[in-house]
Image 1 (spheres, one colour):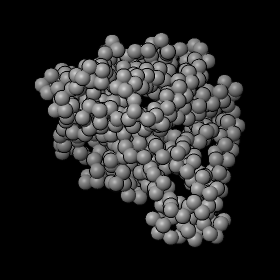
Image 2 (image 1 turned 180 degrees about the vertical axis):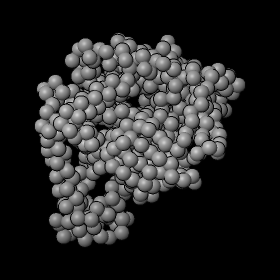
Image 3 (image 1 turned 180 degrees about the horizontal axis):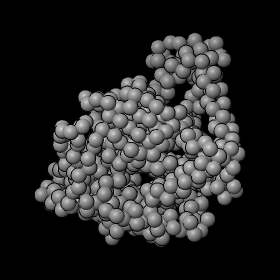
Image 4 (image 1 turned 90 degrees about the vertical axis):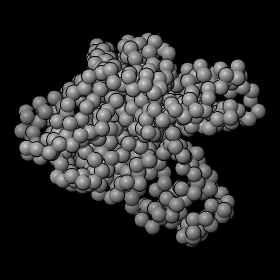
Length: 525
């Protein structure tokens, strides 16, 4: 587990020593989830992933402490597994596409199941039926994850990113345009498909433009928010369109956990959009998409990419979209399965938060045999615990045992001299105040012009990303979520710094030169 950073002054600038685990390598660090559904992530990686992709992790670990969680894999295994999967992709051109297709097939089965669960009369279901739903959900989730690992594996290996950068660098040098490398990389890897968050933005702009085209609707949306919803039945076609939009996108902010957007939220957004020339914004967004396509075609032509190189970048763009899209499927499933967890909690006399810290075997025993895990134990797991998945089995450690497991690995020091180096996801320069954003709970920190710093970004923090002058992440390659969204928004973005969230803190001022992949500390908070 990461220990508290110790700040030291001396020499030139500020030096920061951060102690990191050596037995386990941190893969993600956030503050918005419980043991459920995270154990599905670790069990999937150590289970059917080998059958799906030909490689797997031997173990995975989760830590929970003070509302934050960390996801770890055995040191060295991320690279080894990523290299193995990347090797298969190099040897078989159809391997990645097959994995993507299987992920979507299992994703469709997963959402069909959660759609059934969310619409079922759960209060009338027996305990055995509730367990059946839960067990089926876990199985479907793991099947999708087993194939979906292809995206983070390809990203973590760095192979694809390196190959793309090498290709662009070589072509730029050949044509004497080395200074435009970042511009060409951004153009060639811009996703061809719209993410769900972008689809939400486009849909809302279309609804806002429709409001402005109807004088009666426009007058209604100029009224206080509380007066709008009750009167929307006077506009049946628009009301139906808005309801369809809510159903399609309400779950977007939920991520692992969280509250969905309701109709009032969408009405309030529309009230703001109708005053901001939505038709012009819509036209600009659509024109931006066309410009991106034109920029890609121009880049292919200027660099003289051959068919093999064009196909390589097409694969990268597919992975860019797929990596975010597969997470959206999982996040939607978490939202739709929540009523099941809530009903189970009510049956067992526990809170939803407590049930989220139960393992499947414990939940089965509680529902079918009445062996309920004590609320005190579940609360202790939330306060501090470690869960280790190995051989398809997850065990939870508490107290001294958990501390002992986390302390068994030796650490190493990471020196910070005021400069972070990463990879350019979207070129540009910016200066701003650092805000660490680990989950939606941190969104209120962000002001327009701040520099968003995160381990990695997810759809639930796009609202904050839109305010950012620049984005900096610890992890990720060109197929990460931060890379996708930063390009959609045109915000300078540096990814893969490894320790940005460790060496920077809220209130620090930094300068970001994304084209060079550099983040410089200007002053400490």
